[in-house]
Length: 86
Figure 1 (cartoon, one colour):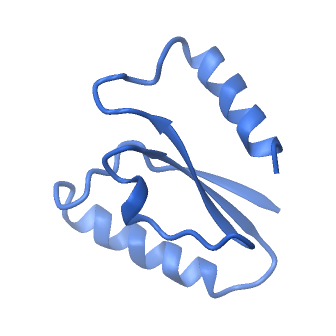
Figure 2 (figure 1 turned 45 degrees about the vertical axis):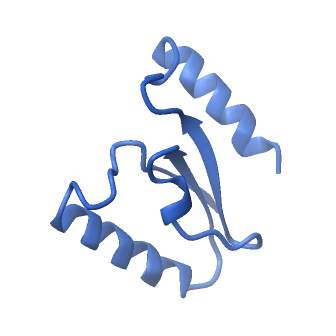
C-alpha cells in the first residue's frame, strides 16, 4: 500500500515534541515491510526528512511564502498526479 503523509506543517526545531514523535514514528514504520511512504514536504523541511528510493520518497509541494498554491481541490489533484507518477 502507498501511504501519503502531509508534513507541510512540520517546521524543524519549532514544533518540539510533535516533531520528535513524528520522526520516531517514521523511523519505526520504515523498519516494517509491505508499505511505501510518500512524504509531502515544504522547502523548509524537505532535506531533513528520510528518503529511500525503494520505500520512502519525498515530494516537495510547498515553497516558503508560497502557501499551498490555490484551492484544496487543485492541491489534491496535483498531489494525486505526483503520487501516481511512480
